[in-house]
Length: 218
Length: 120
Image (tube, rainbow over all chains, first blue to last red; front, side, top):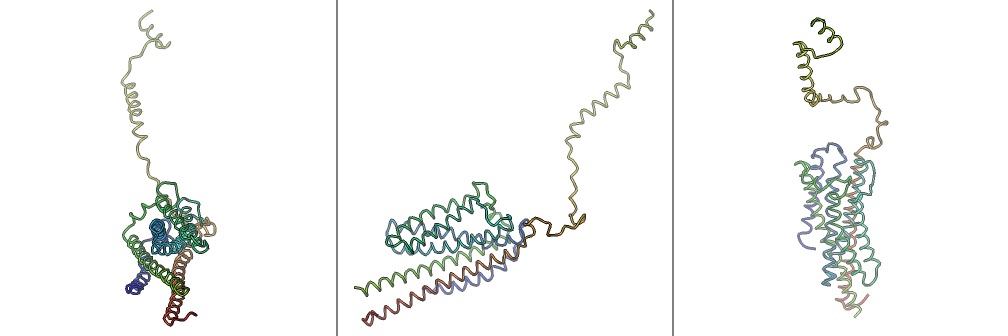
């Protein structure tokens, strides 16, 4: 692992420890009250979910058309992070919705397209695990669909009638709410970078292990 | 027939127009004024309704009679959401760490085997 990894992991841990204080200090939203504070972890995790899908898609495209194993490893790592951050998004969202909307789930465009993106990420991992020879390219094709879904998820709230808050909410946040949100966002972005790095390192070690076994067989 | 008698007969039978008196003019002016002002009066802003006093000043409503959504406490949902985030992130970190340690150990073992020129 690179030298910067452990210090940055420490910084990230301190940031995550400080985030609840900023979130607690932010004003309550007038209609939703306390439960709206889920937003400060929900929105950054959703952003990391979409970012993971984009990284996975771009790396898969480069692997498909360039054949670089390094890009394949990056795509595999990003797909796993898409599942992780997607799970956080899809669990925290309904917990918020239960109080704010009165239901756990609505077949709203934003929610449904997010669920589809998450299932595509799962499909990628399952194909990689159980697909046998050639599954890396099959999974890379799936990742392209996962990436194509990302803009659809993002703009869905602005183009269709929906009960989900629109994208215009974030730029209009008051200072204390904005500070808490962007601090949480920075926490999640740094965590995403660190997790991606460590997960790619794991794939590198696995590739090294395969090479070692091959060299033993020869 | 004398003229005064003719005029009296016409007035009684409703023939001919009476000359408007000053009193008639005043009544007509007031009516016209009212009609002219009516739209303006109608368009005047209605007095703003006073904000309703809190329901609790009229009657006490037990929380059990509120809709289910309003009865739901927010804190357990918030705590569950944040707990899930922490558990998921820590769980994933542990999982990656465990897998990495296992692979690293295997790599070290194979490298040492290769270095010794033996196969286990």
